[in-house]
Amino acid sequence: GQQVMQIPQYQHVQEGEDFTTYCNSSTTLSNIQWYKQRPGGHPVFLIQLVKSGEVKKQKRLTFQFGEAKKNSSLHITATQTTDVGTYFCAGPNQAGTALIFGKGTTLSVSS
Amino acid sequence: NAGVTQTPKFRVLKTGQSMTLLCAQDMNHEYMYWYRQDPGMGLRLIHYSVGEGTTAKGEVPDGYNVSRLKKQNFLLGLESAAPSQTSVYFCASSYWRDTEAFFGQGTRLTVV
Image (cartoon, rainbow over all chains, first blue to last red):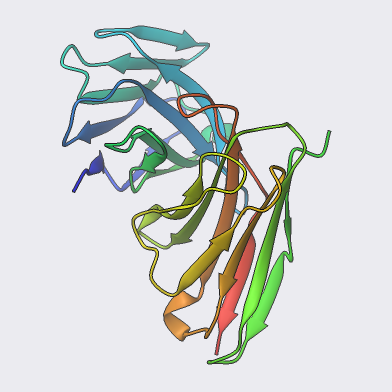
């Protein structure tokens, strides 16, 4: 069946260091979404990428969608303690009727 | 706007008991979803609905049933709870299939 995989599962950085999480799908995706879940909270939508090779920025966050539309990445520049949480990528299931999530990358930041 | 509201927020069940989790959204969204979240497993889709009166199985549907009699409500039922169903359950909704999903606050369920 369709799989959405994320690496790494955990990442610890010192405040100010950069962070990247990678997402790979077993099938071509029509779009990919990224969510952030703070500890004890619920997932919150960050962004959606639709076009092949698309790059979008939100302040210190840079999102990329691969040319083949099977992979994506989220890069955070100069991490802050407020970046702590779990980052999920999500893509449509094969029928295109529901969102399938990766297992997430949990980021911890020490000051 | 309340967004997506889940009730209850916490529940402890004994093995074999039944319960229903309620999800309500006030955004007139067509799509609604139930996910479970377990450590290291991410969010796994249990069941979903693409509109009032419809339901479909997700990745891990066994042991659960759902109903969507009204557009704004999506119910998740456990007929005979098992310890393996101890988890955090999230409901989500979206306007359409490729649009942003809004999540509820979650229900922490423990089955003993």
